[in-house]
Length: 221
Image 1 (cartoon, one colour):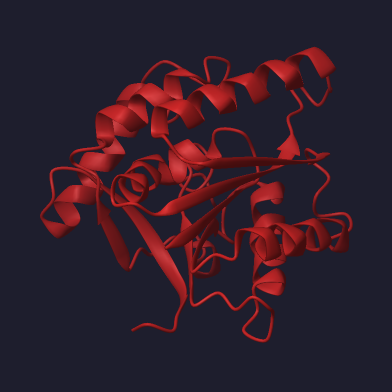
Image 2 (tube, rainbow, N blue to C red):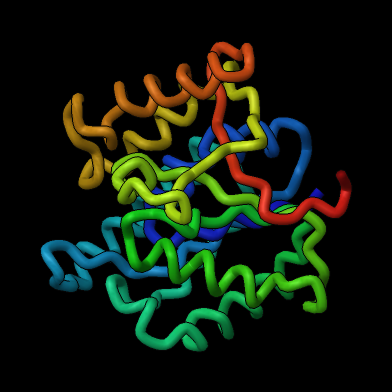
C-alpha cells in the first residue's frame, strides 16, 4: 500500500505515528511523510534553525526507514489565516503520493496549526477528490492533544489501534533526532512520556505498546 502521513510540524510524524510508520515499512508499504511548516521558536524564524530541524527530520526518517519526505515550507503559527494556502499544496502532495491511507493531525488539538492541517486534509482528501483516499485517520501528539480543553468536540476518542510493541524502541530513537523538541519527564514530550502513552494505549487493547487513532473515514470496513 501507499501511505501518506501529514504532519503540521517536524516531530509530529514521530510522536503521532512513528511506530506505525516503521510497521508499515516493515510490511512492505511505501510511506511518504509530508511536513507542512517551517518551525518557529519563540515566535521567531531562523533559517539556520529551520535547516537544522529539517536535518533532524531526515535523521528520524532514516531511523524509521520510510521512503519519501516532503517539506511544504509553510509559515508556522499562521496556517489558520488562509486555509487555501495549505489546501493547494496538500492536494499536490496527495496527487503525487496516491495514498490508500492518510494519517493526519487531530481536529481537537490545542494547536491552531494542527487544527488547520486537519481541516485542509479533509478538503484535499474528500471523497470526490482524485485520487480517492479510502482510509483517513487522525493521530494524537503528546503536549498538544492531551492539552485540549475539556469539551466533547475537542476529545480524542481512539477507535483504531496499531500494535507497535516491536517498534516502540525505534520510535524512541527517531524522537532522539529531534533534540530541540525533547523535554525531561514529566513533560509529555519526553522519551519517558512517549513510552508511558504507548504502554497505556497498549493496555487499552491488550498489547504491550500501541499507537491510537481516530478513524475519520474507512471505505474498507
